[in-house]
Amino acid sequence: KFSNPHRLGFGSSNPTGKIPLGLKRKGLRIVVTGGAGFVGSHLVDRLIARGDSVMVVDNFFTGRKENVMHHFGNPNFELIRHDVVEPLLLEVDQIYHLACPASPVHYKFNPVKTIISFFLFLFTIYLILLYKVVVVFLNGGFVTRQMCEVYGDPLQHPQKETYWGNVNPIGVRSCYDEGKRTAETLTMDYHRGAGVEVRIARIFNTYGPRMCIDDGRVVSNFVAQALRKEPLTVYGDGKQTRSFQYVSDLVEGLMRLMEGEHVGPFNLGNPGEFTMLELAEVVQETIDPNAKIEFRPNTEDDPHKRKPDISRAKELLGWEPKVSLRKGLPQMVSDFRQRIFGDHKEGSS
Ligand code: NAD
Ligand code: UDP
Image 1: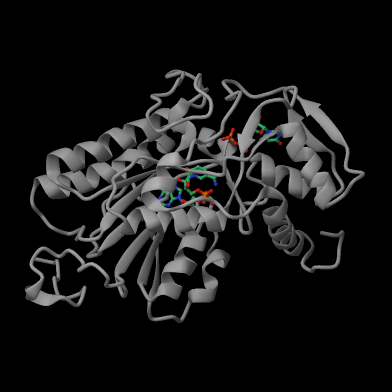
Image 2: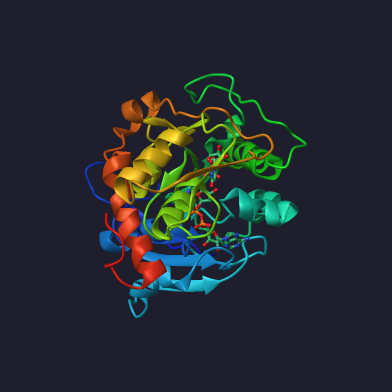
């Protein structure tokens, strides 16, 4: 009763709701949960620029109004303060589900809430479909972002989408890792059982402007520490690896995934792999060659290695990252410098 087949502009002559080949989809109504956060706000910028109407649903746990304030006053933009674990009635074409605390510090703060925020939102949609109360018009698609955390502390390297992972189900990280895994299960079950059009992205470590400054993640920690002339805190021996993706590459991948016809899962990450000591060196080169390194004990269940195999996304989405760590980091540094010092003059980039 709420869905409007005319909204896509094809009317009843297009009863399937499918977009004819060759026509670019524009003017969709899109929900971005977690859209006031780091990744979500960059996605919102791209969608608005494309001509879509965007509704951001965010409870501001880690997100900030400042990340989307430049859209205030734009009739194509709406911001709703709402917790995704509670039902919300909306008529939309696509949903990008990004809401969830992303840094270990934040997701361990309330682990039960963390695991719930992954799948309760999906569960609500399932109930809606089950009871045939059409409040979510899933014409376009539904991207859930999972993290490479579905792989846990991987025994396969690099990780392909076919790898099932190695997760400690009772560890301190499991609220996140198992939450992501459960969400993937539910997403596929809606797809198979209820015919919901879905897409699944497995996102690897991503950095860029608008990251939370003190969220405890390694890139934000090192950049903020170097700018504040504090030592870079390397956990453990610093030989563990991660692969760092610049945020614009991720947003491009998410949009290609949504617009494409493949469900996934797709790894979206930059295969350039760095040890934490190597990352510290890049931060020193970029901000302050004299920045000191301080070793701290590592956290429990920390994955030893992480690097995406992105062959599937290359082949089926025509996507690969374009921005190397050395190119992307200075963009983040100038944003952090401005937010920490309020101007561009302190330090160098
Ligand atoms: P972020 O913390 O900046 O953004 C998360 C947003 O979700 C915030 O705006 C927060 O306020 C909101 N949020 C959290 N819980 C919510 C709830 N219950 N209801 C409504 N809003 C809620 O983090 P991010 O880095 O932008 O991450 C976005 C998504 O991408 C997360 O789901 C994260 O797991 C995933 N991801 C991020 C990375 C990365 O390295 N940045 C890597 C893999 C996956
Ligand atoms: N890490 C570090 N110093 C910090 C914060 C994190 O050496 O100040 C390490 C952490 O132990 C992990 C890696 O950096 O091995 C990535 O941690 P992050 O929290 O950024 O992401 P995730 O572990 O979720 O990949």
